[in-house]
Each structure stands twice: as C-alpha cells, then as structure tokens.
Image (cartoon, rainbow, N blue to C red; front, side):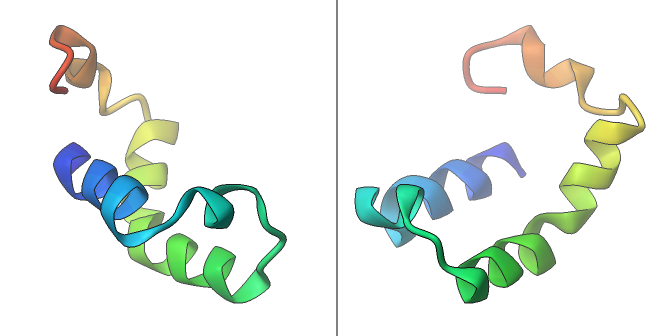
Length: 54
C-alpha cells in the first residue's frame, strides 16, 4: 500500500495540489486511503519502518 500512496502523491498529484485548499481532493484522498489511516491509528503499520521502501 505504501507504494500506492507514493505513486498517488508524486505521480497523480502536482506540487500545487499538495498546498492548495481543495475540499474535493481532500474527500478523494480520504475515501481512497481511509483504511490506511485507520490501520495507522491502530498501530498496525510499524513494519513500514523496517526499510526506506516501507
């Protein structure tokens, strides 16, 4: 999943997207990656720290 997040952030978005106020984009990101956020909140992603690649 970390590769999908990185690909989304650096290939699908532009640097302008990173800093703009865009509620529609926020909703899209939230719906697309909500499960990952939930996993992180439950401390289930600590293995991502094992390497630079996640």
